[in-house]
Length: 71
Image 1 (spheres, rainbow, N blue to C red):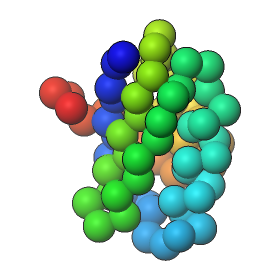
Image 2: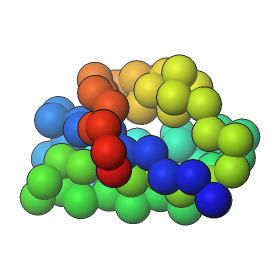
Image 3: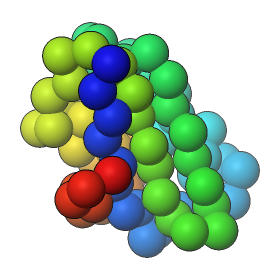
Image 4: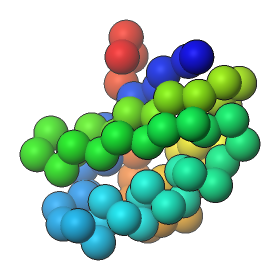
C-alpha cells in the first residue's frame, strides 16, 4: 500500500475536511483518507495512487495542495 501526503493550507473547518475527504475517496485506488485540520495535512493511502489525480480531486473540492515529500 502506498502513502501520499499533501499540505492543504486552505482547510479550516469540518466542512473543508468533509469536502476534501469526499473528493479524494472517489479517486481510483484510494483506500483511506486522513485529514488533520490542525496541521493542514491530508494523508492518502491506497494502491496505484496518481499524484495528479489526487491533486485534481483536492482542487475539485476547492483547495490548493502541495505534495509533502517523504510522507
